[in-house]
Amino acid sequence: MDGIRGARRVHVVGSGPNGLAAAIALAGAGRRVVVHEAEPTLGGGARSAALTRPGFVHDVCSAVHPFAAGSPFFRTLPLAAHGLAWVDPPAPCAHPLDDGSAAVCERRLDATAAGLGADGARWARLMAPFVRAWDALAADVLAPPLHRPRHPLLLARFALAARRPAATLARVAFRDAPARALFAGMAAHGVLPLDAVPTSAFALLLAATAHAVGWPVPRGGAQRLADALVGVLGARGGELRVNDRIESVDVLPQDATVLLDVTPRQAERVAGHRFPERYRRLLRRWRYGPGAFKVDWALDAPVPWRAAACARAGTVHLGGTLAEIAAAERDVAEGREPERPFVLFAQPTRFDATRTPAGRHVAWAYCHVPHGSTRDMTACIEAQVERFAPGFTRRVLARCASGPADLERHDANLVGGDFSGGSHRLVQLLARPRLLRPYATPDPRVFLCSAATPPGGGVHGMCGWHAAQAVLRT
Image (cartoon, rainbow, N blue to C red; front, top):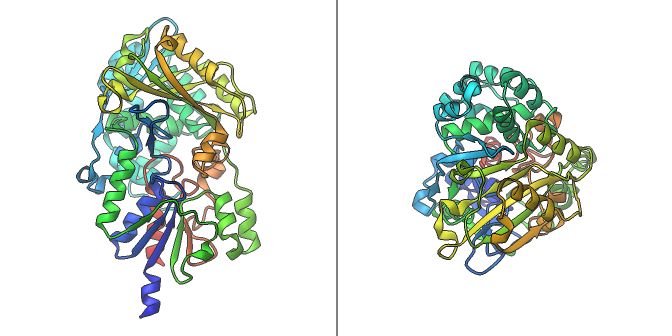
């Protein structure tokens, strides 16, 4: 009986959305689950804190959560019963241009098309098959690469649409600058040069989520998502421990199953002595992607956008034209900090007044930088905001800048500032960290469940859910 009880014990190292998803799935299957978190608060990349002034709630890492709202696993959980409320901005995303106009990705596909002029019908034709069938598409694209597709024709259509790099597809599919820029901004979320093959897949998925489920923010901050997941886990009998850094899996019960919500570098450090040298070399060869430089602001008023439509968007992409965005992302890939970076900007208090004192606002932005960059990009980021919102810096009450080293100190998984768990280059996007049995390790009691496993980065919990299924199969 002791062996049976031991086999049903599970320890999860790391409390990011994937670790919590794995823990919830296994607790729901009758396992006795303990989650160990090194930091004082749970949530990994989904945390909030007063980074600038007391009473101003900032999202420490992730801020906008389209994949959480559209996650096949999270959507099965009673997150609302544990305090999560989604706030859905009227427009998921806006992309301002220098002439004072903005391309807007509206919640409705037909409304987006209406705003894109001659390219509207082309945008709708490209996106409609994936918007209409988002649930079916998500089930396949958020699965491991080697799986039997539930909807093979839909997946084949998606692969055909995404076969060309984003820079090429944008020029082929659209004629005018606004639609091309809007597509390029979506693609740049992949943290790759826009002439890399997977970038169109990122753009298509993000646009499809915008129209199918929106790009919502959790009311009260990203921490509320993590807290709701913790609430579900607690209701299923799971135990959580904070300030509990696991330096070696040997401190955990030897007969328990261990899931590591960590990247390959940490996995090799805490469990490598249990693996053969060949697998350890695989983990050491893992390629991390570019880093991020992030700035949080406390503001005395809303952002003064020149293009009024930007005020309706939860996320604003600041980078100008397709050519400018491609140049900035190419600089990053080649090891240079761009002078005019592509900036991803979130303004949650336009739609959620619970995060600040009355009449005040917070905003959050980041740009991509080379892995481990030490350059302060605050001035470059604020210059891009001022470019499209003149007078922005006069509204800043306080700011908090975080470079790659700061991000990694906050969360050891953000190696060199990489928040994606590893580069999204095509080979590694498929083999995370290996093509066959990606969640299992050579030790039958140790599994991986972080964003370094399929389907990769994003707050969707599917890496954890798939890892949990791998545990249950064994």
